[in-house]
Structure formats: structure tokens, C-alpha cells
Length: 119
Image (cartoon, rainbow, N blue to C red; front, side, top):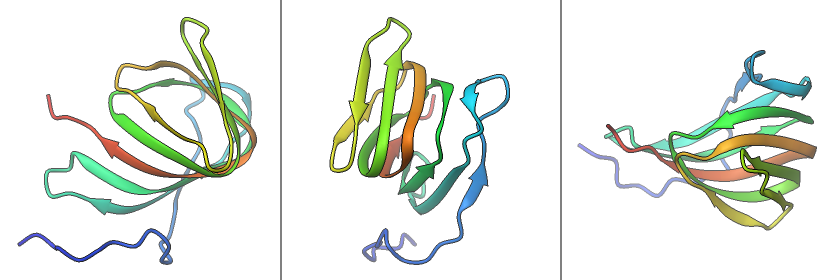
């Protein structure tokens, strides 16, 4: 049976702590924290909070992600050179297929919602 209760994204949850893989890291030594609050039964939709310290790494998205920045500053740059900067209160979508870099200019945090279609 599916849980139909509202899921708050501000309750205490232990983070999954990681760092970008060495082959993707371009600068700094960023630490990433993920607090996933929700996963649907199909394992295609996820929502939670993410934070990172300063650094820059290569990304390749297989999922669609809605991001709402809650603190800090980031710059995403596509493989074709299009740069987008975001700070607190900014909301944006990174579509599946995006290839480029994610740079944390100021330690940051965001609320995310991810959809990853099964292939």
C-alpha cells in the first residue's frame, strides 16, 4: 500500500555524504550532502535537500531535476558554453541530457525534485 501522508522536507534526516568522483572533479574538494525525503514506489521520482561546499565538477544528467536554491551561489555551464548563475530563491530545471559543469561559488543548499524515467 502506498503512503499517502504529506512529506515534510524539514524534519531531521541523516545525510548521505559524498564527494564528486575524482575523474569528474575540476577544482576544490567539495563535500556533498543528500537528504532524500521522498521516493515514489516506482523509484522514478525523488524529493529532498542537497548541499555542497565549494568546488567544480563535471555533470551528465540522466534525470530531470527541479532545483530551488535556499542558500549560496552556483554556476552551471553547458558543454556548449552557456553559463547560468543561481542564488537563494532562484528556481530552475536541469533537463535530462544536460552535460556540463556544476560549480559551487559559495557553500550552497537547495531543495530538489527529480524525475528519472525508466528506460
